[in-house]
Length: 161
Image 1 (tube, rainbow, N blue to C red):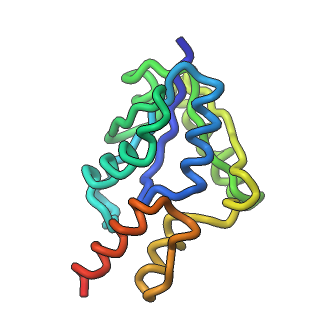
Image 2: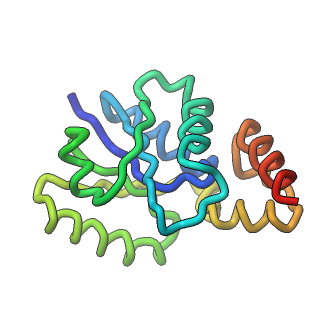
């Protein structure tokens, strides 16, 4: 079985993330969307909320499973017995960082292979950080995230007001 892991914070999950997830699901037996728990970040959504949002928006993709991990990705590769890690590259600027991370992960765990996927062009500029920034300024994020995420972001912003 070829199991791929797509790690990230997914705060929130975007249409770009979903594009990569759907395309990875076409080439793998199973795709684990791995929500990273990082106590040093202060995310908009809790880990549990992010997991539930991803489960909701990927429900139509049968070979996707949502998991969570803490610590090193290189260790999670062993824990979840994955064949490779998927990383999205939106622009050339992402490559340098992702390339360095891929090499470090492989140094930490020789079994940690990384596959890079580019999102469809219409999502190449979308990031969770930009979604949070647009929403915090009262802008519409409906073109960039699924409807369920639009609603969750709206509720989160209202509760912060």
